[in-house]
Length: 372
Ligand SMILES: *Cc1c(COP(=O)(O)O)cnc(C)c1O
Image (tube, rainbow, N blue to C red; front, side, top):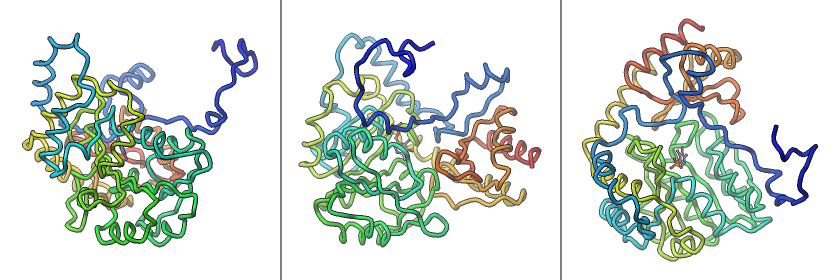
């Protein structure tokens, strides 16, 4: 029993009011948990958009090499990693902040810019951590529904902006829909927004995009727009377990965020792994190719089974299973296949399936056909 339950409090210290409004994050079930709970040996996780190829082998070597230095504190400024990122993004190191996963960047942005009563605008459904950061600071999230086919509705986003709006959050490609905001629409949004509004452009999945009219947002940072681009090493770089990501923004925005950053936020292994991974072009290319093939495989299988899906520019697909989605999701789990239920986003007829290896995708489709 928890010693601090509301019915039986052993202390009287009040938590901040904002905590009462926080919704807990629901991560994809870990493999070991399904193995233990259901007694299944072979468990396939297609629930957290991880890289099925694993980490860059160069990153793993870098981690190995660094182990004898673990008694040292990490570089608080992540100088080498920022330099490696700067070289590949044509940005200055001063335009970069390295964080403990992209998630930490979201909290830092919230702590830097949001006061109680401020508003953030975010298309809905999207990644839950924008709202988490806002709620933590006592700010309010204003959701803007997508248009048909989960397309971004720039006019609706602009209409939702008020005098209280501090932040507009654009996740492109969006999690969980996989839909991206075309470059000219992004430019139209940025040009129309008041300059006192910061745009968080979450490009966690940018490396998977093959559409010609996509922008990873960095060009707008280079031009000095009030934009911060989020990137992560958890997805294509295959380093979700080590926790590292970064933000790219005009220098004064970065300088403000650095004020609230803990000195040693990114551990030393994460720094060397990320620097190696970002230079490993073979791994990035192989990951992209595997993803494109897997996506085609899933589309083809879903088409044969008669299920709809949303065209994705990412490493996951939002699948429309219909009114039976909860039963089918449960059936998949009992066959050792973990996918993400759409229910957390209010998408009760959907599941989000990460694109896996050809074998994993095949087993998912096979299980789906058995459960139909
Ligand atoms: C995965 C993800 C992130 C960042 O994840 P970290 O593991 O914290 O780096 C950010 N935004 C979106 C939309 C994501 O899916």
